[in-house]
Length: 361
Image 1 (cartoon, rainbow, N blue to C red):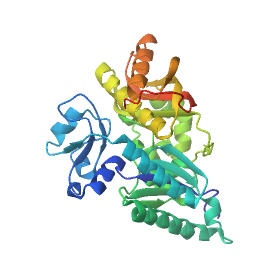
Image 2 (cartoon, rainbow, N blue to C red):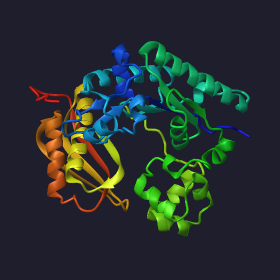
Image 3 (spheres, rainbow, N blue to C red):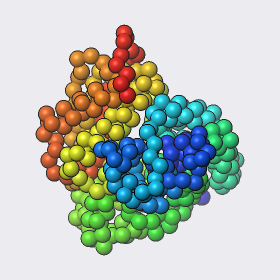
Image 4 (cartoon, helix red, strand yellow):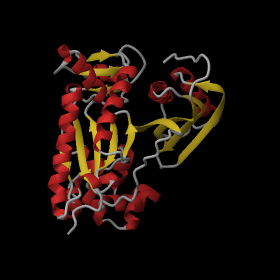
């Protein structure tokens, strides 16, 4: 049996922002580092070190909550320019292994390495894939002093799940003929996009593991997740037909966040939009681009998804202006109805700057 139709790596840097801070400041190593707003101010956690995660601190959690959970946590202001520069250096390392790199965020990317591990005997592609992944991990650590977790599979979904399997500093390879058995015992929350609300709905239908999804009827799944049932069942079998995107021309810059628990809290939504705007503005600044259009994406608890956008009077790059535009869209389009599962902010109509820009990040 041919073990892989394709060989896809998902490379995910471990606690990226916090790891950079611990690398640059040795006195922080082994300590609970929380990158984000301080606990006495309104704001959210961007990233928490694994030492802080032991206390239950998570990304996008309100900083005040993080402060209560981890009273000895060391809160640090994000250094967006530093993280962006580090991301660019890591992506260059990935590009040295294959030109087929799809960067999906500042700290993760998919790589199609099929050509790199092609062997006369297809079975030999498995140890070749492992060797290549180990070499990539070692080079990132040697050159950047950071660890990455890598998942290896025949598609994006499998490699993504695999990269989360043994964090931090993990390497997990999912053989094609073993993918269903690998997925069966995992909790349903291991599937990207399944959060607490949809997870609870699945649990109400006695669906706790991916194996339960594999064994479910379409009607049973539809009762839990509606129109997402067919796609969810395909994922549970390890099937994912999404292609990697290698378009080098940047058409948009965006950032999304899925809430751990669906929310209608206007303050939390505004704070999350501010965090997303900072992510987007940081990318625009690093790449020397301005944006002429701001778009907001809202996905509700029932998976209904709406997008709204506005064209700006003049191009912007500042987080403050992007945040203001996103808030304006949220209010103008009356999107604060019901419980929200996911928020996204993106910009398009990108161009190099002309004249003096407001860089108030």
